[in-house]
Image (cartoon, rainbow, N blue to C red; front, side, top):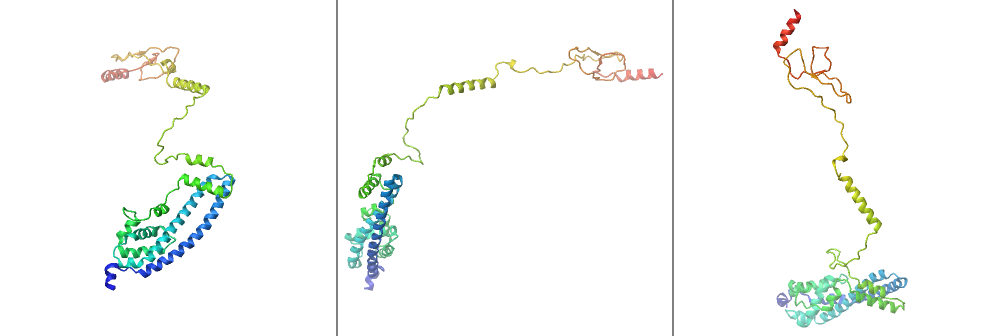
Length: 312
């Protein structure tokens, strides 16, 4: 028998698998009873919310009830598969390949094992089937590849997705009838029928909005203020600028003088704008009136002769 175990079973222990399956069945029943109590309490809480008019909170909490009911239904399916595998373990132990009539049960157990944290025994059962049929067989079931053999209803019950609005509305109506509430579902139906916008990619449809005209008074004031602002920024002509008071330039002859005795005399300024007396060069004729400006120096030889004559 040890040779057959090494060839076919590859370490698969039927007794251990049967023990784990037998432990899973009562655990499922215990969890089912707890969930029934929790669901019953949650239905009463939702009935109170509908009675006081808090429909928004009731629409959110009803999703939790749907989720718990789905898990409870999935565990009922797993309970049947566990009983079937436990009964047919002798057939599994003797055959090398997975029997066709047990493929759905074994694949469903392998698929649900990592998704049911409350049933840790299923993970050990999954490891035993890996040692029996290989990792590829279990990977096909857990990853839902083609021809995986997993029960379709079990996939829907254990899938993580938001329930449909129709299902939530149906459950709310059942709770209202169960607790004999006079609840009008019209507002909830309207909320469920509203399209949800895609906040990441933006709206897919554009709706024409109403164009409201601006008030006449405010619109005219806006136009007038804009026109005044444009006139202030852009002057019409050069007359808008203030004239600048610039000093007058004295009229001076720029012709150089060759005679040392005579120097160019600046014409007297106009009486309207008197200018300060500024001597632009030294003058030897102190009696001369007016402004004396030497634009060109005398020749050095002439100056030397005049100085020597005055000293003698």
